[in-house]
Amino acid sequence: MILVDTHTHLYLEEFDEDRTEVVQSAVDAGVMNMLLPRIDSESHQAQMELSRQFPENCLSMMGLHPTSVDNSFEKELEVVENELKTGKYIGVGEIGIDLYWDDTYKEQQEYVFRRQLQLAKENRLPVSIHTRDSFDEIYRIVHEEHTDDLSGVFHCFTGTPEQAKKIMNLGFKMGIGGILTFKNANLREVVKDIPLEFLVLETDAPFLTPVPYRGKRNQSKYVVHIAEKLAEIKNLTLEETAEITTANAANLFKLNI
Ligand code: NI
Image: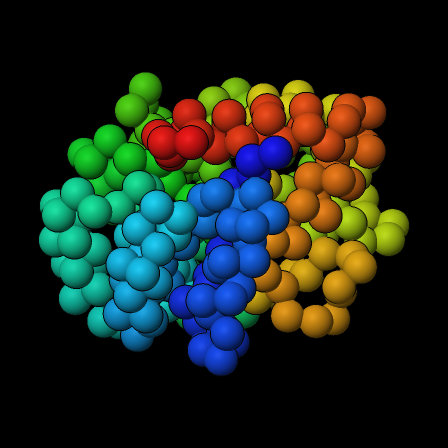
């Protein structure tokens, strides 16, 4: 069984003590690819070091995270634009709009998001989108920028059936993470009606740890617990669920697995 963790931040300091073991144990569990969305310049070096250490397994995206957008966004955007020209990246992410923590820079966040969608199109790369209290803003901008060259994932999807329908109409995927395993998660009902071809798996490690490890640090090998829950909801075997979601991720991010 081969799995892909399409969204994991294993380069963050939470893994400084045991990063190599964490990656190796994920690979041993069949998680052959771990896709690393970038946050900003601060953690960029650690991210690239991890990709260099595991060039077959830890693949990097390039982007500026919405919560890192402030008045110095132009300088950060220039870094993103120049780095993408190197061809080292498998996607543009994570990008988006976050109005939950702080909406001071709403206008700047919208501009930076749109600009990075354009960079994704120019570089023919998929995007990993962070949506938090911002679905309408995100949808409007993706819809306006939408062309056949634009594809990607709404990472950490927890939306409504209507939002899922809008995402599918754009031809985008939804990233399903640990929240699916939480008791009383409304997400289960919504996911039931989304065809498996529109879903990819993710941990968002070190955050959003699935049951039975909830409350502890998340890591990429736990993606199997999300796959198990999804298989249960879809009435499929774990192997079938892994096969289809892995194929979805491989097609979208052009992975060699
Ligand atoms: Ni993330």
